[in-house]
Length: 347
Ligand SMILES: Cc1cc2nc3c(=O)[nH]c(=O)nc-3n(C[C@H](O)[C@H](O)[C@H](O)COP(=O)(O)O)c2cc1C
Image (cartoon, rainbow, N blue to C red):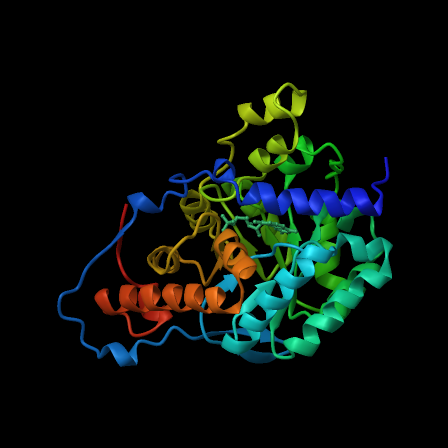
């Protein structure tokens, strides 16, 4: 059944409201509490020298990024989402960090929806945006339509989200995932920007990470369990006596933790970049994930909460994450992110 515009708007509003409900968080399950970095009492550097900058290669050139921290894909295509995206894009512009936009699915059917990005770009011309589309839409869309999503956002890369649990628990869910690997492979060949595959909070197995190796993706953002859980979010959209609510309870802790997913990528010996997200709530956790091998680390829900409060709250959150990461690096004797990746990690 095709979803009407008002049903779509309602679903997006519900997602934001329910994602902010503490019941939707798989708190304490990201695996990061069991990871310890080693404190070095005599780092051979001055705090001021700690450098958290990195880059992203786009069209053969390295685009500078002030930090490995990025704003994970959230929302798009509806009125409330517009203000959120504009605030997030301003932050991305001010600090030269990457920002994933939410699923651009609506633009596939309604090209007017792309106007949102023209407004965003007016306010944030230097924002480092990454487009976003779901695997089920990718499988059935001609490549020209997908290219338009990249053009409308002037994106440096395109995220493809894989979310089988969410789709299975969503009343309007699209569960046709067959031939997904081939669709990703074709996208990599045809789309003209780097492709990054991500989950939405359920992580990745060794096997799936190995299967993605042949597609030529630039990176996989593991987006593991430990933060916003989309099985829970979809479940709470239903009423307590409804089937999907009850089934979602069964799957409320489903998934591979963020830490385990990164370790799985190591075990799979993948040649693409490993990005990490899922329950990342402070800069120490960012540092731990970088030490484990992630080159970029995404944060979603905390940025959403701050965006709803405005620019000042976003600024405060980003500064906190940044300072915590810098302190982590200082106290492990890491001058830059490359150094941090060589540090021993205790599990
Ligand atoms: C309100 C909201 C909407 C989201 N929408 C999308 C989306 O459209 N596409 C996507 O790839 N991920 C989406 N996500 C998932 C996030 O990118 C991320 O993978 C997940 O929330 C785990 O990160 P967190 O624990 O920091 O929230 C959304 C997350 C939130 C909170």
